[in-house]
Image (cartoon, rainbow, N blue to C red; front, side):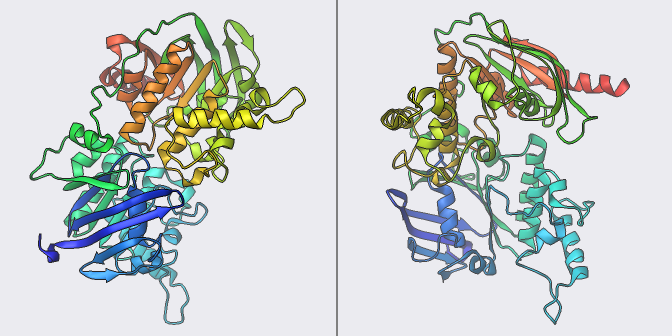
Length: 521
């Protein structure tokens, strides 16, 4: 390959953190004008490699060379890489909620006049131009970022990058929090930018998206490049990519449960109603009824905004909503749940879709995060003294059991990859020995290998007689792991499916039919 065809060369990149070699002699070549994807398991080193490239990890904190447009680069910060035309959009969006779209787009890149005062007219004109390039022509540039959805926020981030004259755009998990329609729109924008000459590097766990838009895919495992696949010359299929990622074939994406008897009802919700957190006149959940039995996995499926998370959070100690009414039964007995402690005391656990806000204390250790939900019940003596040795022993056992990749149980959570953080969340609640587990988007933002491990864990919970509720935006996933599914649309349960009736087509048909029916009412 001619050097003039390459926009980027990363040669023999090695990055070491205390106790962990994150990258080992990694070599990456990116062609000018291509869409190049990076994939691998959580903790494989994908984001670390891009942080090295963009200056998040400055020159001399790693070994190896970076050549951009043939020039040796020694970036000490992000600003220096952006001046060269390299812009990274992280999974956690760097937008300020209470500033406007236009203000967010030019933070650190302000449009000023000759006297160094911000030229607001120029700012607004260019903001509109950039938004039009990403398909947001009619968006009000003066509205606050918090007033638009996550999908549009991603597009604002891309518009922000275009305003910096980007020539290499790096997107880290750009569709992790988007629904299918938003994801398709974003991918089409990336393809459009390719036509305009912008080179892109995408990090993603959604293999179907990578195979759709990528020219080449580089697989990284345990800090090393395993192979690079070229659409023109190699088999561009998910099984090939998965085998390279995990080092083995996953013959069955959704493993079947064996010797798992579905028993008596454990959990039941009757006539459940919830009003919006901020608007007491707006009813979000209406007369919901459902149940889960011992050894059973039940899915809650529906489109984004259907009310699945609001339903789960309202049940789990009234964590969401107001004017909540209805009844909850455990093992046939009516129980009262007014707060999270009541839910935990009644053996109900809930893993949030937003693990970083509601599931973890990122600045604390793996051990403390694992044991925090069961300290008083499991790790305290009758006199209220912490049983430290038991806490350490159990944390080590569960770190190994869940396959959490970290040097020790004292490692801080904010140094772990998303998949390993998710494993800690699940370990935390399972160590609390619940009878009912509500898993809200349990595999969001994690790789196919880690997903498979979580599916096996769900099976193990069911085999132990637990009642498991799974909420997933990926219909094939919800169907693949569940014995039954309840279909939710606009806050109401509109159908219950099991067996061969559980198909995406049947679910969407029910949703469309219900939406049309409501439109006529």
